[in-house]
Structures are given as C-alpha cells and as structure tokens.
Length: 274
Length: 354
Image (cartoon, rainbow over all chains, first blue to last red):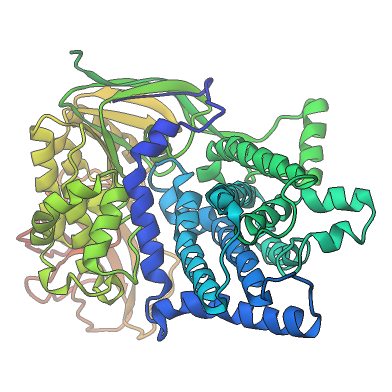
C-alpha cells in the first residue's frame, strides 16, 4: 500500500476503493450507535416501534378520521404507514448525519479515515427503523386483509431511491454543518416543514388538483415528494409516479451526486475547522 | 524492494490567524480589501519546508519546543490535516497514535470498545477477534471486560486503550507523546513495547519531550524550531543541542529579593538558583543528572531553624521526588544558603551554610 499526499493535487471525487477498505469501521460505528442508542433506557428496542406507532395513530386520527383524506379503497392507516416508513427514515438520516461530523470531532482530530464513513454509518443505523416500519406495514396489510398492488416489483427500486435521497441530503447537511453550525438549528425545522410539503399524510393528487402549475413544479423539486409518491404507487397502486414526479428523481439524483463532491471538498479542511 | 519507507519533501502548513473566516461575508470582504490595499494577510506557518526520509526499520524522533510544529507535522503525515505545500509518500501500512483510546465510548463495554478502538485504528474486525484474548491479557482488566468503560478508573481505561494500540501491526508507526500518560510503571511498559516494535523492523516516527526515550529508542532525531528543521542527526547530539539551546534563555534563576516576609513572620526566600554540579545555572535537567538547588533566604525571627525541603516536579507537572534535610540546620548568621544536591532515585540531601 502506498500513500501519496501532495498539496497541489486533490481528488475531487471520494476514493471509493478506500471507502470500501474501511467497511469494518463503518460496521463498527453503526453497531456502536445501535447499542448506545438504547443503552440505559427502560423500553430499549421497543422505542423503535413506539415512535412510528405513535405517529401512525395520531395521523390516522387527524387525517383519517377528522379531516377524512380521500384514499380510495385503501384504509387510511395503511396509506399513512407507507408514507411514514419513508419519511421517518429520511428524517432520521437528516437528524443524525447532520451533526455527525461535529459529534465525531474527537476522532476526526486524532485519526484519519474517509470521513464519509461517519454519515454513512448513521444512515445505516436508520435502516433498523425503516425495517421496523416495514414490518408494521406488513402487519397492517394482514390486519386489513388487503393485498399489495401489482406494481410491487418496483418497490425495491423506490426503497433504494428513498435511501439515495436521504443520503444525498444527509451528506450535504453533514458537510455544510462543518462550516455553518447554523444547520443544526435548521434541520429540525426542515424535518417539520418537510412533513407538510411531502405527500405523507395526503396523496400528491391533492396538490396537483389545487395549486397552479408553477407551485406544483416547486412542490416536486422536493426530491422526497416524487419518491414517496412512487413508493406508495408501487405498494398500494395509488397515485401517478410519472409526470412531475420525474422532477423529484432528477433533483434527488443531483443532490446525491453533488453531496459527494461537496463533502470531499470539506474533507480537506475538516480537521482544521471542527 | 526499496527500503525507503517515508519521503517528505518541502512539507508546509499555513494557518490563517484568527481562525477560519468561513462564509461570513463581512470577514471575507475585509480580507479581500486587505489584499487589494496591499496589506499583509495574517498568516502563520506552523510547519515550513520540512524534508526528511525514513528507511525501513528506522526510528526517528522529533523534538522541539511547544509550538515548534511537531504535532502539525504528525497530523499532516497521519493525513488528518492537508498540507498547504509540499508532498510526502509513505510506502506501507501506517498506524498513527496521536492519543490512546481514540473513539472510546463510555457507554460501551470494554469488549465493545476493543473492537471500536481497534477498527478506528485501522484493524479489521477479524484481526481484532484474533488478537482479542491477547489484548485483554495485556490490559489486565479481564474482570471488567463486560462493564461499561464509564465505570473504569482512568488507569484501567488507559491500559485497555494501550493494549489495543500495542497489538497494531503496521509497517510505519506515527506516535505522538503517547508515553505522557499513566504512571511510571505504565510508561516503562509502553517504552518497552515500543522498543520491541522498533526492534522488529518497523519504521517509527516518534514525537516526544522525553529526551531519554528519544535517545534510547531512536536511531535519528529531527529538531524542529518555528516550523522548520533546525538540525537532524544522531539523537545524542541533537537532544543536547536542543537542551543547550534552551539554556541560553535561562529561567533557572529567580531573584526574589523584593518578596515580602512569609505570613508566619519567620523569614523570606531572596534568591533561587538551579545549577548543574559545575555551578552553571540551568533550567533543564535529566532525571538521571545530579543538580544543585541554591536557596538564599533571610530569617526575620530570631532563633528560627529552617528545614530546607524541595519538591521537584517534572515538565508534565508530576512530582518526581522530594528532598529532606539530612539534619536540622542551625543557621548562625542572617544569610543562609541551603544547598540540596540530589541524584535520584536515591536522593541524598545535604545542606550547608555560608
């Protein structure tokens, strides 16, 4: 193995081979976070169930019963859990990876490894919550005796897209917050705000039916909007994954690619800044 | 296969004083204005123009005063921070130990922290698993291995951390003052382990303030001053050059003639002088060298019998030893010099009067 560092040459893209070589560190950090998360809690792992369950109940009461959001033949809780599963993962990654580099500053200042490992391991921890939400979704399918849509074959694709969008956003925020600690205050706001401007509690058709075209364009520039709509289409057969949803896919892909480039540029100065 | 392991060429690191400006538009504007008006930007070169090479199996020590750029140099070579100029190449697997126990998590058990710390230091999980029993044995905390590390004493924590570090098998090792932790016994253990590492043909780059460690471990030594290489060569010569250089700025003598009389009214110390056995004032001494401490004092209270006692601390603030007067002195006159001559570990004290 040969390491060459030259002040004049700096690679713009992350070194994927080096990243892969550090897979054990990635795994260890993810295991650490999982273990630490529920250390000294009474409910322990049950928290992974309680949180989405509470969200599901509240949403079903407010939007299912009170507001009576139109969801066709699909029972509202089932409609909601599909959106919640995607959103809770996205929110987790944003929240955790946002401050992840700052949180790991003790390590970052003392030892080298590809810094991308830090937000990536946080995103991996979130998969645990995603899995729990998916199991809840399966339970609701059984409970209501509903069978999933014929588009189910596309579900894995949209699952990957959810992860890609969450990663892209999370990596951007983790890199930005190295220089602008303000981001730590913006993230909770983004998560709260994002829940309204993403079709989680309601179908996207509500938006397309009620606002002018240019607002719709803005709405679907939010990468999660189109991805969640597609995710629900693949599972429940509701909505339309084409049209403006394509815009979300483009902005999501853009976010993902640029996040690596920006992160790499911050990697250069991270130890001097944190 | 070439024997050249490390090549450093013209390495330099510049910091902007006052910290990074970030995106603050006002700070940026002031900076740009300064540049336009020809004012000098306040830069600081922590390291500049450093070049050296290491061959396989060499142990090179880096010494220098605080702020000479030692740590910045190690940080660049460990790839923690990026150089502003120059380049370096390292052939082979590198481990850098800038502290022991990097990444230890208080909530996790000793076992889990071995894996965490091990992988942070660059080991594979399988490798940690293979060496696990050895690491636990070496650490001597077998009984507590499933207890969260937050309940460990600081000594246990350090021992566990060092046990992990000691089982790294890199070709090139970068070490910064790791020996500065723990008690004397532990430091001896660390030094012993490092000697083993050095003798096993691995290449070591070692920063320390401990001149005897540098002398006994290293085959070559680099003296840094204000970020630049001031001298390089045989450790004995370089360390004494460093120590002598410091002697030009004496702090080993203190005039206290204007100090007030002690609160109990017994008297006051008027002058302190720390000298080598030839009577030359020094401010630095090896723990293995004999030195004299001269204390001039005045006695205000008639018939007061002073008992000269000196507590000697090392540069890290740890108490090295304490001297006791061999017999109580009876000062006949007003001006008395108590002279304590010590050569530890068996410290003898003699006091005499003038």
